[in-house]
Image 1 (cartoon, one colour):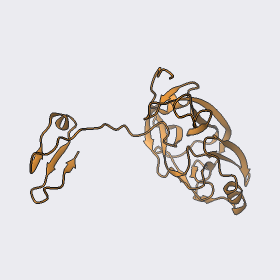
Image 2 (tube, rainbow, N blue to C red; image 1 turned 90 degrees about the vertical axis):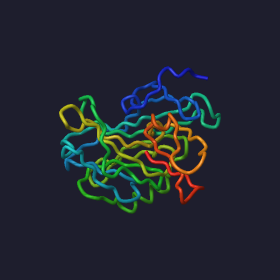
Image 3 (tube, rainbow, N blue to C red; image 1 turned 30 degrees about the vertical axis):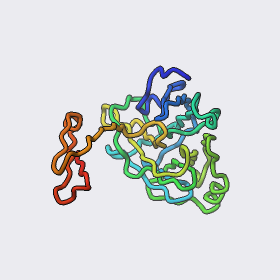
Image 4 (cartoon, one colour; image 1 turned 30 degrees about the horizontal axis):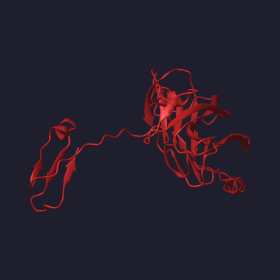
Length: 241
C-alpha cells in the first residue's frame, strides 16, 4: 500500500507531476502532465464538447479569451495500488487550456462543459456553435478510446487546430471551470472528468425517530440539517438543509 503523502483537491495539484491522490475506496493514483499541443485563438472564444456532436462556445465571465496561442494539457492519472485490474492503466482526469501564468484565485463554473457520448472531448477555437464534418465524426466514432488508455492528439480542420482527448473513464456530462486570477481575467479553462475533483460529501447519521414531529440530535444541528416526521405521514422522514 502506498502512503498518502498528501490528498489533493484542486486543479493545480492535478497538473503536478507525481501528485498523489486517494479515491473513495482508499486506492492511490499518481498524476503526470501530458501536453497535447498549442491551440491558437483568433475568435476570442473556446468551443468545448464531444467532437461527434455540437461544440458549444465558452466565454470567461470577464469577457473573452485573449488572442494568442495557448497550451492544452492533460492531467493523466494511473493507479499505483488497489484494484489489480486497473494497475498499469491511465485515464485523463482533467483537460486544461492554459491562458496565462498568473495564479488562479478562484474557479467559476462555465456555461456548458461537455456532454460526451463517444468517449471523446474536444477544444476548438470558434465563436459559434460548431459541428465538425461528418467524415471527422465518423473517424472518431471508429476510434473510440479504450478504457484505461489515456489519449490526446492535435489535428487540423478548416485551417484551425483541433484538440481531441479521451474523456476520463467514458461518457458523461462533464463540468467546465474558468480559473480567474487576481486581475479578474481568465488564466485557465479546465474540463473536469470527475475522477479526482468531486463535490465533498459528509455522512450525517439520523437517529431513529421516536414519533411524529422534529428529530432532535446534536450532529444534525451542527450540520444545519432539519429532520422531521410529518404528522399526516408517519412513515416518511423529511430532511432539509
